[in-house]
Image (cartoon, rainbow, N blue to C red; front, side, top):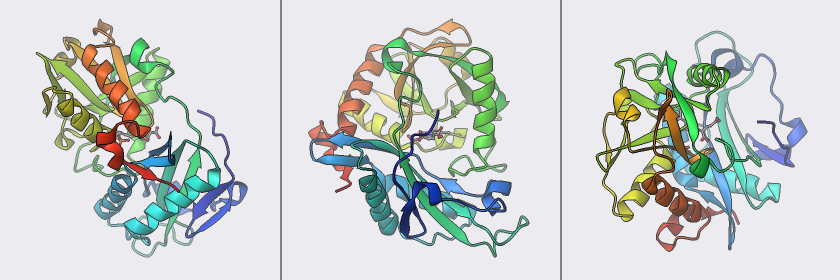
Length: 305
Ligand code: PPE
């Protein structure tokens, strides 16, 4: 999706003009995929722009860096404040936020130990990732021919730049085959997640979502959805899902920061009832929660002002 520019990008402690937020072509992460990143959304609330679960996202960024053995030059608190300042600088009521920590210019070769870590935070307006009205219309998914990398290949729990080679291969394959999104299976054949979303399937009335051990990212939207679903009185569990669970599911939905909550209409041409009542109720509550319209979840909305 094309980028709409905003005035400033935060780089290593300062807000610089969008056009000046440049890196050298010999930036280490550009060659080896060694960076870590986050995807966050700020939403319009009646108290101004609020960044949804900002601290949780920055903690995950720190955890991704820890898994990679990358020293983070800024604390969680510093990056939370930097993100808020960047959101404020856009003047936008709502935007997508992309923090990125990467090994910068100055060293080449696979040894990251001598490399300098740079951090940037960019914001831009970003529309519905799975298309407009993804809840009502639903998306068509395909099981990918690409396998999600396992824990001893590329740790899926870390949101590293290089991990997304796997997701991009699967996404483009699905799009070229006429689908909207791909579902990735772990090396043991169990369902992991989608290319940029966690997945949920309803079987016998119970909502299931695969664990981190199945190769899924510990999604912050996934966690929010689990809280919302429990509060709505649904039985929701983290458990393994087999491919055939998907084909005969009563409902399937995917969720992530960029995608929010979207229904799945079919998997490999097997039609899934869509939109399902549980998906609809969860998506509606999530849409209000992120905008500060659900008192119970106001603590998730971290005001940028
Ligand atoms: N799995 C993957 C592989 C993933 O990339 C995301 C987020 C999720 C699950 C959901 O995580 P969370 O956002 O914490 O609920 N994907 C981000 C990047 C998307 C992109 O294309 O870029 C996002 O949604 O911001």
